[in-house]
Image (tube, rainbow over all chains, first blue to last red):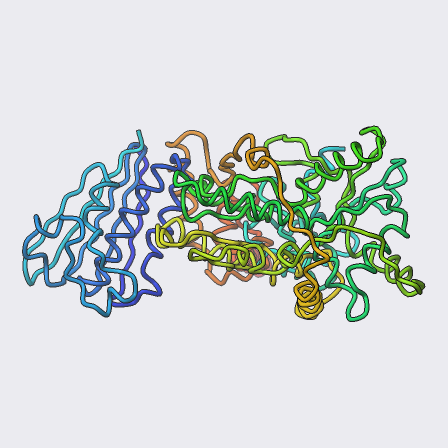
Length: 141
Length: 439
């Protein structure tokens, strides 16, 4: 039977002090599992962006992580406002973040494109007023 | 011999009480208490010296060379770290300290501060190269470099690939003495006077088996009293013409000193290994891409807070700042250091990732082990009390899976087991009494 390592994290709303803890934790787990550093890096950047998005836009949410010998699948979901125009949101530099968030150095409009760049499969399901689910897959080989 | 010197930081078993102070503070979870004594897991130790500072019984120490080892060479060069100038207080100027080193028995003194200026210039030209990966992370602190090798492989490319001031000073002074006085190279002994345990390891076991130009490392602690006694007897201080470094090199002893030489750019100066960890965490997340340079020093207040110093780092800072002010007012005495070829100072090879936290070479087995660790961790009380000798419940679970510890090392688990045995005994006992009744 193939072993799968699983993790669940709560992503609190509007709390930047905790944001990033989940991706940081996943980075440590992947290193312990012996995943190559460049893949660890891609995974943690993609996950971090998704985490931050859930904090900024999604009113917080949760992350579920599954790791097997071939890949890691990260599912981050929120019950926030959803994304109106996904195609537009995917463009570099497009942002709906308010000034208060931008002043903190977030919300530059690179989140989704960074996620896409660093994951092998990026699957986004979103519905206005219902929430967004981002599924990031990164293969180890 | 090499094995012995693999780490400067070692344990004095006779002084160790087996308390849990060191295991809690070690940034790489490299210490366990086993059979009532601390044990350092060699491959994890980065020689940061936190345990030396934290141990209430002074059972952790840094191995350095004895002062007498300078006698093994007929021509002796001293390389004083700028931190040395902060140790003695008002009245004991840099000139007096340098003179005292000569009176102690050194034939030649080459300030590491001088080399620090050369490194500063080299760094400036390195930073102007657009191909480098930013933020550039200083490689001056060997404990930080080793920390990155273990914990942050993705930041290895960000390391400033320029030799440390100590190595530059060693190479230059040897060359200078050889050329100026015709002393054969094999007769020259180069000794670094160090505030730092990691520098000792850096000399005895350099990164990736490079060869150090330093022959021996003496601790500031050991040489402090001999120098003080000599200085107290100095009456007429006629400092011979001696090329002393400028303020920039001297300020390297303090946090912010190395990066203060750059006029432009966004710079971070962070000190204390746990603070360094936090900043490096930010860097791997990509949050510091707008930063040009990170000066990261493992010790509080930088090298002034090194484990081999005598003076409190905050007091030493006042001393050093006074000295720096004096130098600035008297710039004529100092010579800006230039080096012909910056390329010569660049690392010939990089450092490598050391995946020592890896659970298994086989990914399948690693996953299984991770699941076992999760399961065992969940069964523990989660107090991270340290009574088992591991820094946290999870660390104990890892040790168990790595077959270096047992579940009953946890006193709560042990109590459960003892209770259950007691219960069983009680049952046997009551059965026994019934038998008595039957008789």
